[in-house]
Image 1 (cartoon, rainbow, N blue to C red):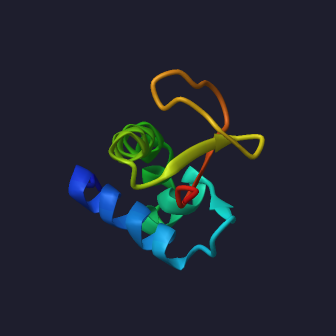
Image 2: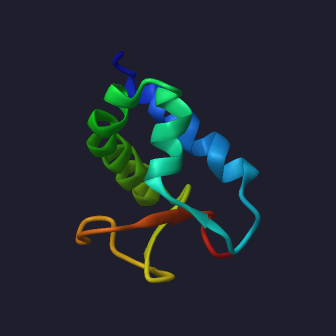
Image 3: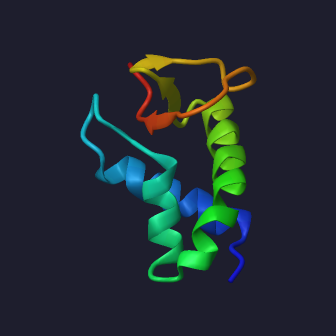
Length: 87
Protein backbone atom coordinates (compact mmCIF):
# COMPACT_ATOMS: atom_id res chain seq x y z
CA UNK A 1 0.00 0.00 0.00
CA UNK A 2 1.36 3.42 -0.91
CA UNK A 3 0.36 6.67 0.71
CA UNK A 4 0.15 10.07 -0.94
CA UNK A 5 2.17 12.90 0.53
CA UNK A 6 -1.11 14.55 1.57
CA UNK A 7 -2.03 11.45 3.61
CA UNK A 8 1.35 11.51 5.35
CA UNK A 9 1.08 15.21 6.14
CA UNK A 10 -2.46 14.69 7.45
CA UNK A 11 -1.24 11.86 9.72
CA UNK A 12 1.57 14.05 11.09
CA UNK A 13 -0.81 16.97 11.70
CA UNK A 14 -3.27 14.63 13.43
CA UNK A 15 -0.46 13.46 15.75
CA UNK A 16 0.58 17.08 16.36
CA UNK A 17 -2.98 17.99 17.33
CA UNK A 18 -3.13 15.04 19.76
CA UNK A 19 0.26 15.78 21.35
CA UNK A 20 0.43 17.94 24.46
CA UNK A 21 2.61 21.06 24.33
CA UNK A 22 6.22 20.20 25.13
CA UNK A 23 5.73 16.55 24.22
CA UNK A 24 7.05 14.93 21.05
CA UNK A 25 6.34 11.87 18.95
CA UNK A 26 8.41 9.66 16.70
CA UNK A 27 8.09 9.08 12.98
CA UNK A 28 7.48 5.43 13.93
CA UNK A 29 4.17 6.48 15.51
CA UNK A 30 3.11 8.14 12.26
CA UNK A 31 4.18 5.09 10.23
CA UNK A 32 2.15 2.89 12.56
CA UNK A 33 -0.88 5.13 12.13
CA UNK A 34 -0.60 4.85 8.36
CA UNK A 35 0.45 1.21 8.01
CA UNK A 36 -1.85 -0.24 10.64
CA UNK A 37 -1.30 -3.98 10.78
CA UNK A 38 0.51 -4.04 7.42
CA UNK A 39 4.04 -4.54 8.73
CA UNK A 40 5.47 -4.62 5.20
CA UNK A 41 4.25 -1.05 4.63
CA UNK A 42 5.90 0.34 7.78
CA UNK A 43 9.55 0.69 6.68
CA UNK A 44 8.89 2.18 3.21
CA UNK A 45 6.98 5.02 4.90
CA UNK A 46 9.97 6.29 6.88
CA UNK A 47 11.62 8.35 4.10
CA UNK A 48 8.36 9.98 2.96
CA UNK A 49 7.51 10.78 6.60
CA UNK A 50 10.91 12.40 7.04
CA UNK A 51 10.43 14.47 3.86
CA UNK A 52 6.98 15.59 5.02
CA UNK A 53 8.35 16.45 8.48
CA UNK A 54 11.09 18.57 6.90
CA UNK A 55 8.54 20.41 4.74
CA UNK A 56 6.29 21.02 7.75
CA UNK A 57 9.26 22.21 9.83
CA UNK A 58 10.29 24.66 7.11
CA UNK A 59 6.74 26.04 7.03
CA UNK A 60 6.79 26.50 10.82
CA UNK A 61 4.09 23.90 11.51
CA UNK A 62 6.34 21.69 13.65
CA UNK A 63 9.81 21.36 15.13
CA UNK A 64 12.14 18.47 14.47
CA UNK A 65 14.06 17.60 17.62
CA UNK A 66 17.03 15.41 18.50
CA UNK A 67 17.81 14.72 22.13
CA UNK A 68 15.07 17.20 23.05
CA UNK A 69 16.58 20.14 21.16
CA UNK A 70 15.32 21.68 17.89
CA UNK A 71 17.48 20.98 14.84
CA UNK A 72 17.85 22.57 11.43
CA UNK A 73 15.45 20.69 9.13
CA UNK A 74 18.00 20.98 6.32
CA UNK A 75 20.85 19.50 8.36
CA UNK A 76 20.06 16.67 10.77
CA UNK A 77 20.91 13.01 10.84
CA UNK A 78 19.75 9.97 12.70
CA UNK A 79 16.91 9.50 15.14
CA UNK A 80 14.51 12.41 15.44
CA UNK A 81 11.16 13.30 16.92
CA UNK A 82 8.52 15.90 16.08
CA UNK A 83 6.65 18.37 18.27
CA UNK A 84 4.59 21.52 18.14
CA UNK A 85 6.77 24.59 17.64
CA UNK A 86 7.75 26.58 20.71
CA UNK A 87 5.93 29.88 20.91
